[in-house]
Picture (cartoon, one colour):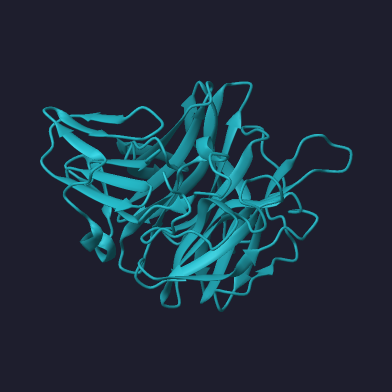
Length: 368
């Protein structure tokens, strides 16, 4: 498999490591995408994470912009980790996990900080960062990835964490009136027999809400959950739950609502398993998938702007009597079983995304 060939349909920076998509937002005529980034190395952890930055008007032509966030303050010198974006009063706010190791400590501390911009390119960090300085009793040391949203006119921040003593992964809820002063509210949602949650998204969809997160199980396996349901009295009550992308080579999906009212999901391909697979980083962002709820199911299908790239077949995909197989060169094939009424494929060099039955099931895979 030739990994040096440039991707045509998936965004990745010109150089350096990239992983989680962050701060997905529509602002001043552009879709802005931020991402965890090591600008000087092709493999992670050689330097603290930054926030890389790109923008597009059509998800086809991308403009790579200057790095948005540098780990240059005492409270984030260990890295600017994942978070989200929100627009208020013509200003773009970035909320991120600010990481540092206190003097004399042997464990990193994970806090929440904010930066803001009026042009969407140059960002100033808030003078009184961090805005959330420690986790509450319901949380634990894994306390990161702020997801900020406005629901019924009030600002909320969902924090991903876990409680080691109770062996639960949790999403905790904070509230604010001004985006700077946050008060802890309650446990929004939780999963038993798990280590921690990561990379949540939270947004209002009509009279209800959409909540997503990645959950790390006790055995280190992960699953990505997309939930739609009621948000009432600080608690989320899922009514529809789906694992939209079942592909083995994706992680850290984030959903945002654009100016057209579409709820768009972008994930990181291929995920942490292949952090050192190649000398050159092979990470990229998935094409945006529009999340819809139909007939009690959650669907993820490529956004309209890129649907002309879909194909009905690909040499790596073989249909069978009861499904299909995605062949990979160095690993076991990906096998799907189930009735197929529609199959669409997006292939970009060594990346493949397969959409089953209008996005009822999605597979993102690295063809190696």
